[in-house]
Length: 139
Image (tube, rainbow, N blue to C red; front, side, top):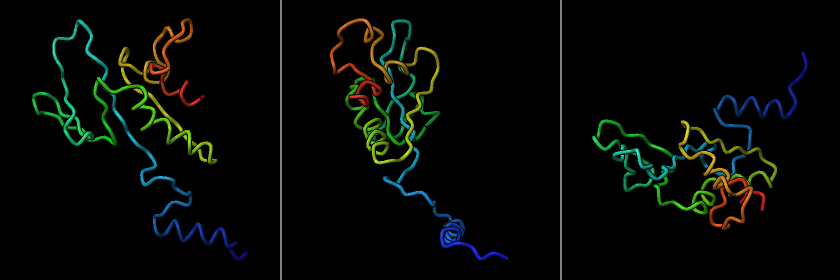
C-alpha cells in the first residue's frame, strides 16, 4: 500500500478537525447582506425595519426576525454597499482567491441597481456616486 503524501496527510488532519484546507482572508467565508430599496408609490407601508445592531431585520408587527451579516436601509449609498460587499471580494480576487457577489430577490427589488446602478448608466453620463458594485469593481 502506498504511503500518503505530506499534503494528503495534512488534508486528512484538517478533515478530521473540521478545519478548511483553504486559507481564509476573513472569519466568515460567506456573508448574507440585505439591502432595502425605497418604497414605490403603490406600497402603503414599510413591512420590515432594521434593528439598531445593523444586522437584524424585524417585521413591523414583530412576527418575524431575520439575522444577516449586514442590513442596509433605503438611505444606504452605492459607495457604502460597495465598501462592505464589493471591495473585500475584489481585494480577495486580486490576491488570487475566488470571489462571488450574488444578487437575489424578487422582480423590481433593486438587484440591478445595486449591482450596476441606474438603467441610464449605459446611455448617459451618470454621476460616479450612483455606480453600482460592478462598475466600481472594474475601476
